[in-house]
Length: 115
Length: 113
Image (cartoon, rainbow over all chains, first blue to last red; front, top):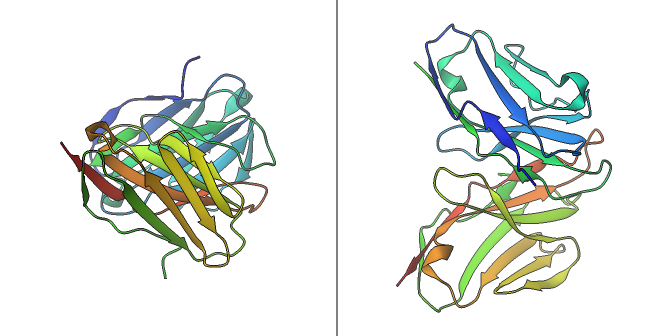
């Protein structure tokens, strides 16, 4: 069974540019989470999808971040315009059932550097 | 006060010894507790999950939970050099219908051959 995949693995962009990150969860997993780790800090929650609906987006830092999960399969996280403080590692995780505290399986992350 | 606290380490133990990793959390509503292992540049990998007070053993790993003290630990017996990694403590509580994870900063473990 394929795990959670993320694309790209690395991205280097200039301040003010736009970047779109993609996550493909494990097949059949309804829950998809986005997390971020900035340098020196802990991994922090951004948002949670159940199928195509945003269940909880309380961790999104500001309106420069837009997440979508059309069709309830893969998800994209767009940062527009990117700022220096957006640099970090963006992780995606998925789990199968909704409404219970389940194991979340993490992807390898996208390392974003904003110059 | 941080929501989930861990000693950042590094924690160094000789091969074959017991490694003890500790974590405290501040939110008493937390229901589920997880230990993830993360090798440098890789994704966090679940090692143990624990939901009830007491001990839970899986091979060389034992997780211990004390909800009254808001404390969770991970013991690694017969430590191997391949156990050298950063260990992340994560807690989960229901919020807005989501079981988002709150992580500590991680403890870096080094097992010396």
